[in-house]
Amino acid sequence: GTEPRTARVVEIARSYLSSIRDVCERPRRMLVRQRELVPVGKIQELDETCLRDLIRRPGRTIPEKAGSRQELLGITRRETVDTAENRVIRDFIRLCQYRAVAYKREYPQPTPLHAKVQAVVDLRRNCERWDASAPISAASKLVGLPKSNYVLEKDRRYHALWNQYQLLRKEEDMVDKVWPWARRLWADFVRSLFVGFLSAQSTSAVASWHLAGTLPAYVRPEHSFGTFVPALSIS
Image 1 (cartoon, rainbow, N blue to C red):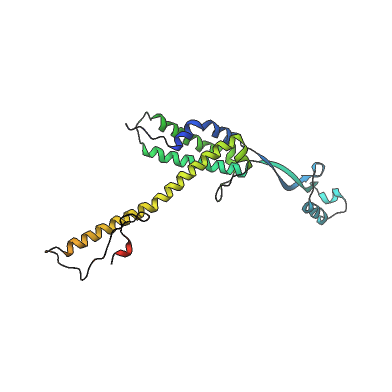
Image 2 (tube, rainbow, N blue to C red):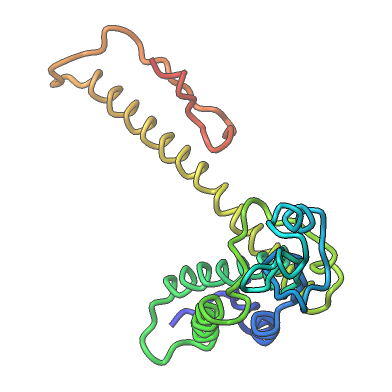
């Protein structure tokens, strides 16, 4: 059969699968501060909000204000993977899945699959699994355009994937730009076909109708954004 093309998703499947696995299973974490009810003996930090809450509580002493459960509002810290860089990586593995499906659709080969296609299929399966159950799945969905940060630029594990993600996004942007050109070319073809049909019918001896006037249409020597026959040139 035809040799499958070496697309970007193939390079990612061949060279970056282990790197993706490493980041998805061991994503970078950060500590975030939060307020919650804490046993009195374990409170280590208070802020203004915690102090205001303490003042409003009924009672004169700390044990009285802590109530029956002996808890007060305090500052705690917890680990989270919901960071900007992990949201980017999660969007990257989702984009890998989408591109892998599109690539596989180009080559509906019977078993056994070509090595390139098989690598892309394996990439999609792994990305689906990591997106659903790996630690990085706790990162929320990326909103808006991805932005670079210190980790994506300086962290060795993240930087390589960030570069591949940017290349994939550029390809997606190029594909998006092709569709308007395709629509313009199709409209141009229909206009040309319609004008040719009307012109042939109007000069036919057996035609049951004739144009009352001329059919002012012209063709540009060079296209303008994919269009050779300007729409306004046709009556």
